[in-house]
Image 1: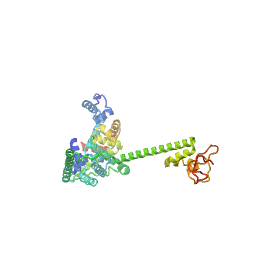
Image 2 (image 1 turned 30 degrees about the vertical axis):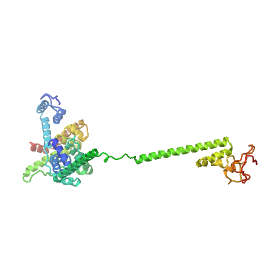
Image 3 (image 1 turned 120 degrees about the vertical axis):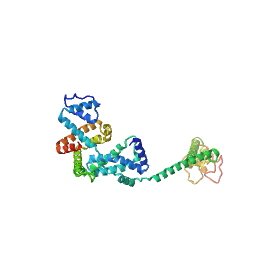
Length: 236
Length: 194
């Protein structure tokens, strides 16, 4: 509240005080003082009075038509209002649904307590878990197979490089099919020795002599005479 | 109407109670109509906006925030509708408003002379209001006609309280000046209010 006010008769109150008066921000005492000061100036008094009358006229409400029915009719088109009787029935129906839900819940709870085995489902693995586990098993089996094949191939190479090719041949032939497939390029002609009889069994080709390799031990048939059986002392 | 009573009516109307909705309308339509009439100067525009504002409010009652005053919400919606209407029909709303206002207040039994005086008084006041810029007019109407506090007006119009006061002071000054330069109407106003 603005307590400052001019002394009556000293001077006309400034516009700020007049505005504060109309804004209702003056204390009762300041208000009385401003009004007293204004009375000493006819023009200021007339201005103040005229403003007050205009504002008082503004407060008088104009006659307004009753738009209630129009508004309700219009609103009803956009959102249906429910009559009182129907509204009460809706309330009862809602209460009934709530009571029914409570009864069902209590019944289920009582049933579980009385017959727990009848109301408890057995644990089951979820399909997703099964798929996950199967995938892991398959992956582990695949890795094991690849590891085994690689091991077989390594052993074959080792045999080829360190031992008699025929021994390697035997080892290779003893290897599982997938290992033989991996080493097929070496099996057919491991040392680059040409053999006209390309359709001869690997064991026969394996028996091809190596030049300067000393006595050859034939394994299987004699490549020069397939009718003859291989013999340790049979040199070409 | 007590605020708790109003909240109860709002809840009931939101649930579809037509009587509650009618009570809300009857309680607020007078002030909203006065607000729109003073702002637009045209009864037909005021009626249309009041109707549309109420319809929008009633169809969205479930969104009402009970922390605020219902009248503030209603007035805000009406104000937006009014601004939209101005934007669409600016020439018609900004001019030719005073002369087009034919008051529906007079009863058939009222003396013709009193009717004319009443109309002259209202025309003068409305003419004075329409000389104000829209912001000043709205501040003056909300403060002096609806007794809204300055802080509430500031929130409603989204402007600082100092600006609201400035609009209020200038608006009053312009109102007074308008009536001074129109002495005949000013005297008529003073006489009719005396």
